[in-house]
Amino acid sequence: RLLLVPLCEHTQFLALATAAVQLLSYSTICWCQTRQGQATPEMHQFIAENRGCVAAIGLFEGIFFPLVMLGAARLPGALVQLLMQAVVPATVAFSAILLRR
Image (tube, one colour):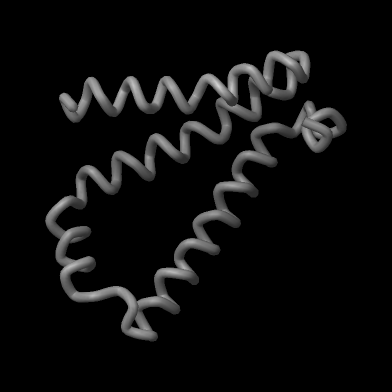
C-alpha cells in the first residue's frame, strides 16, 4: 500500500514490472533446478501433458496483479487488508467446488 500511494497514477507500469520480475525469477529458479537435476523428467512430462491448465494458471495470475494494484491504489488501507484476507477462504471454496472435494 505504501508503494502504491506515490505511484497511484502508474499502477499499470507497477503491475507489469512486478509480473516481469516474477516471470524472470521463476524462470531462473526452474532453469537452475533443471540444471541441478532437481526437476525430474516426470515433472517435465506433467507440464507437457497439462499445457492448457498451466497456461490458464499463468494467464489468471497475470490478470490478478494489475487488477489488485489498480483497486488497491484507490481503496482505504483497511479494506485492502480485508480483501486480501478474503482471498484465502475464497480460494479454498473455489478449489472445493472445482475439484469436488
